[in-house]
Length: 346
Picture 1 (cartoon, rainbow, N blue to C red):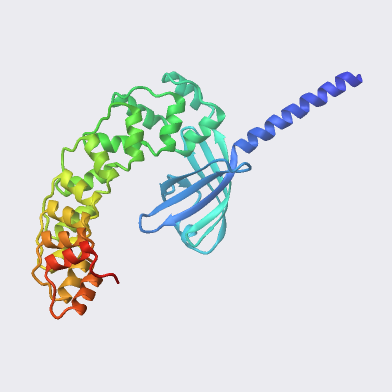
Picture 2: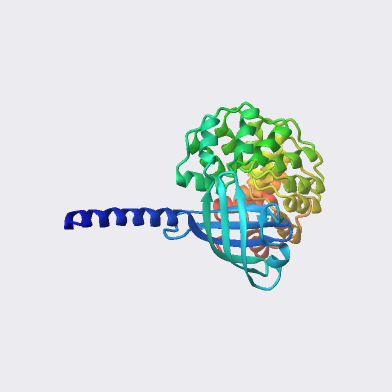
């Protein structure tokens, strides 16, 4: 063999080895496991083996049909070595490492399903790259999910869009759950927006149980964005507000009107409407502010008087010091006038 041919052969071998190494690295990674006993779900976190430039998690039920080769007894028991498997339409993850005390860690390799790319193409999608196929498998974007989108009449997303949807938590259960509640959104991008804003089938069902039905998709996003949760609604009901409108819920939540604020004001005899509660909260009239004036002997102040005092900067400590300088308790108008004119500087 001539020196030129020998060098060329070495170059080809090196190229093959480098390419093989790159592919192996692309399909391997680290994993961590945590078992949430309350929800009875395993959370597995995948991380890139070398570059650490991506990390993603998925929640799974503990069953031999989902995680092959590992049991709940092993996960909750003393630390032991394990090998187990997770099969997805796009390929199979083989895990190796240790678990115990509801935690685990180790390394994984991904074996892509060779027929997956052709099956996607048969359904009208472009064949995914190796990286795309890995991430489709991680997020369980498989044939059931794709067929559900088609069955519901959604526009066919691109393969890149499928990866994006999976990364944002748009799953078969999510899409199917929304449909079962009567929500078929306009585009697949709207599904991503719903999921990003935390509007899930569980959230919608909880609102329905609280009496809020037939809400538009826009109203659901608005309520979720403003922190109107089923727990918040329950707290308001316990404080005496049986049925606020959706807009009232959003308004009181935005202005910091909590159940404790409502009950605190009620404790001093102020049974206020939602609008009055918002007004009091916006002007800084809190239960502690009311209590301070009660201790100084101002027991029958109206909400308007309390707001007026707050707006003119009359604090409890200021009122107390003014009272200490005089022979009698100053009236509300005297406190405001003295504060406005700067009669007393402490």
